[in-house]
Length: 290
Image 1 (spheres, rainbow, N blue to C red):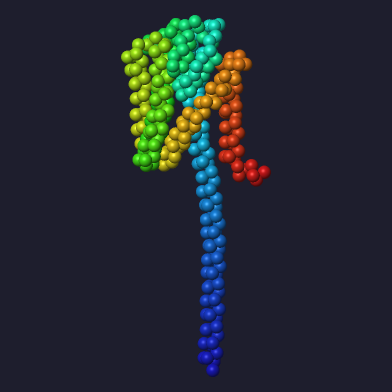
Image 2: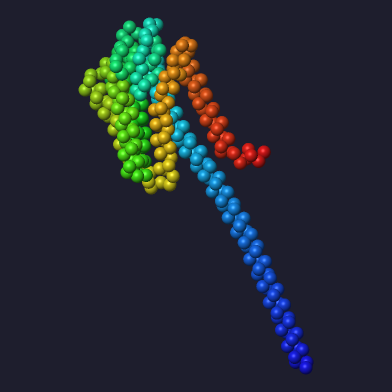
């Protein structure tokens, strides 16, 4: 009788002890699930936040491409690169050449109206480098940078797919043909011979191959292709923006603003507008919690 009672007590104690351990393990499991759920939620939030920043960086690349091309356009056709006199002539503007800012500029009696744009006071400029006048030098330099960006666009597009690369190449060719014709006309009017102008145009276009290799090499760098495609988008947005650029210049000329006043005012608006939107986007969560 005592033996049975002892066995019953021992069995009851072991059963309770086992239940206690099972309950403890279940509690630990629930606690672990809770932490796992919190960690998963936190990780998801971090991914979403990271994607937001990634989109902002791509947007910055788009705006950066537009801004660089805008500055090159402004400098290459501004009075900094021309000898100014009091005489004023009406000008024609070739929309996709480096002469988008030439409309309404003051010029000299030696002004020439070519089919590609109105070239003012270039022939009598002093030589500044390698036998080139200042306007010719700035145009060659700006064209080299522009072609480098074109090459990046084509290379990055071929990394994505062959059809996309072919489409981008056709688009680049369509906007570069009139661009190069405009540059060629300006180089001729600056006093260069036709063979030398053609040679300089050709040499400046070689930077497109350097850009092409940069674009193709981007496949080995994470997110580089996306950034380069954003730069490509900025380049084509700028081509569409040229018409508005000409209207800005006409408005400035009608108010007799100096070129540096125009540059300052437009840069201030451009940069401040971009910075405000960028800061709001980058610190969106912080601002929402205020």
